[in-house]
Image (tube, rainbow, N blue to C red; front, side):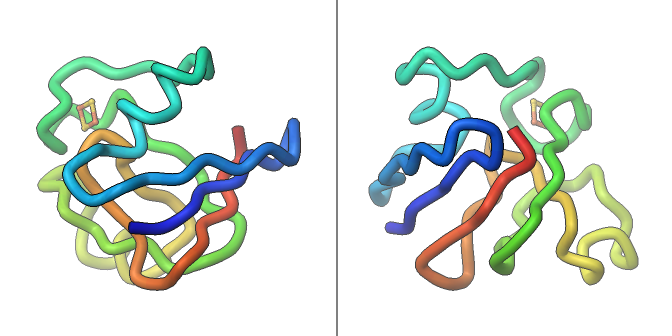
Length: 87
Ligand code: FES
């Protein structure tokens, strides 16, 4: 479990085990474009401003994943306790 914070609003959202960032944000009324929800299409790719994502997608290249400045909220998670998202 971890927390995501949105740069635009400053609001933070708790992401429990078994829920995705996309699910949590969508339920909270935060629109994130998404399609496959399986980490393959790239529709949901979101910039990460702080924190380290745990990449679980098949869309970003290894280099893109290693840069840790974007992630796929439909399936990827956080390595630490926090992610700051450019939303
Ligand atoms: Fe397709 Fe996230 S919705 S990669």
